Image 1 (spheres, rainbow, N blue to C red):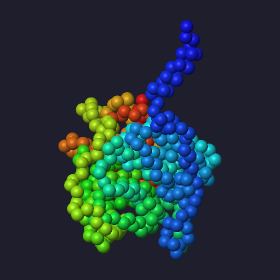
Image 2: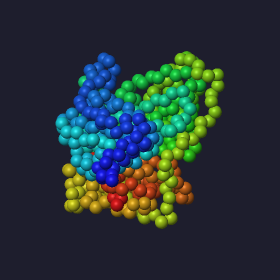
Image 3: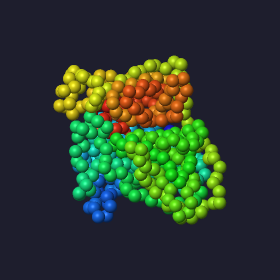
Image 4: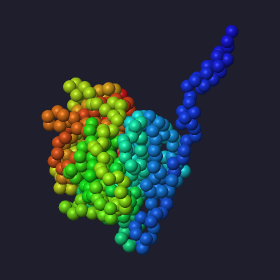
Length: 463
Ligand code: C2O
Ligand code: CU
């Protein structure tokens, strides 16, 4: 007779032998560390002192995490900062317990403490990770990095570049980060915007290319509040994914590309400038163009441009189904300077706008400042939601939903691209739809981090 113990031993060995290929065993190995700590780097030109930053593993951007679709990320986060922190994996349709929202999905990780993040990335695409406790300060100090999930069959390109766009608010003499993260003006207006604009921490990023070379550019806007308006010079191409999710077909880049805080865009571009010229990713500000990234053309990759690229392979569960039976939720965004908010509820009490100003709180959702006791919506698992958002303020906002992607529903009912962050300009009403297929408590907030810190934050519960 086989004893229970022998049976267990036997079957465990059999299962291990039969089902665990070497790579799968490697995946469950020890957690790799990810340490947030103070560091310094040469951010401003060399004639300036180094800038004190906070970085993952002491670098900025933090280490690029690159995995295959469906693979597992196991990182032991260690907090070596002087304040509590947490890590959010922006755009990953993640297990709620691993979403990294201090105060909602986990406790903030105190200085000297650790937290093990362990999750599977179900979708290929361009994602990023960043601090999610006092984000307005921690992200501004440099706590972010790219999280790249590779397609099973990546598109054919000559090379790929991850470009993280940010702006820094630096003291023009010392090149140190302005420590006023609670500035009344930034909070009540367009958010904290920097005076020093960089890509991957470089104000003058320059990448040598060859004529007719095909590049995949993965753009990530890590700025606190800056909306990047981008166009191409000496480069021509297509947008192939937004917020990590593939577009149904590549869209030619003819108009300017608007990249709000938290948003990403994947582009395929061909170098059309001649040898000896310099192509640019151009940033447009007040109708003027600036070089965000320079691409000096130093050779010839091929005699001719290639043909139009194919669409990226689809990710699982990309359709927003069940819109006919959707529950309807409405969100009014209010407040800020030059707005019409005259009173709102703060910590359970109704306050006049004057009192809100004194409390340095400026923004409300449906009449309440900041997180409410009850969620904005309590949703059954699998329920489809239609969320109508009215931006009754004078400012643009970048509305980010955690845990699930949504599609904007156009006037005629046609769904837009699948995204996780929606740019909303002043006075606009827009409707998004999503399937509440990921259980847990999920934040929905403005990714202009000064706005989130002064009221623009709510949550939904998927039961
Ligand atoms: Cu990228 Cu709640 O954040
Ligand atoms: Cu905002």
